[in-house]
Image (tube, rainbow, N blue to C red; front, side):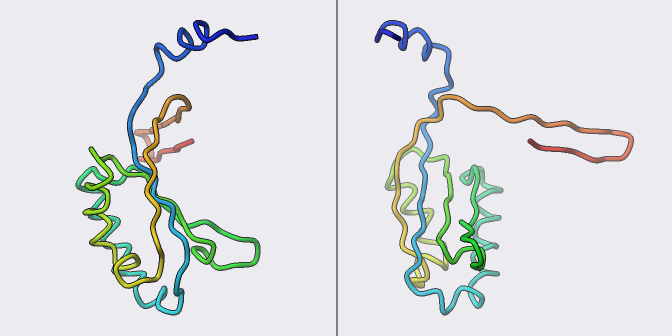
Length: 125
């Protein structure tokens, strides 16, 4: 059995990066196709500014992407900053989705990036 002191020792070297998770819940999907291009442009701009860490729709069996909602992870200093960022998202301010913001601490995990110069390809895992 792990003691609190052992748990603290295990966590000592972990990343401990504060991020904000936005869970999107469908409200009125009737305009999703109409607003999708503007939403994607907004998301790409957030990504380019370094605000958006990761984002994408949930996919329900047999449903269209986004019909079950979605999730975005932001780099920000506060919930208020995330609210300001989200105010530019057409999906949110046009009422397609409601957003719930949760502060999240990234502790463990990882990714692998492989780049091949010979054919200019890459693989992200």
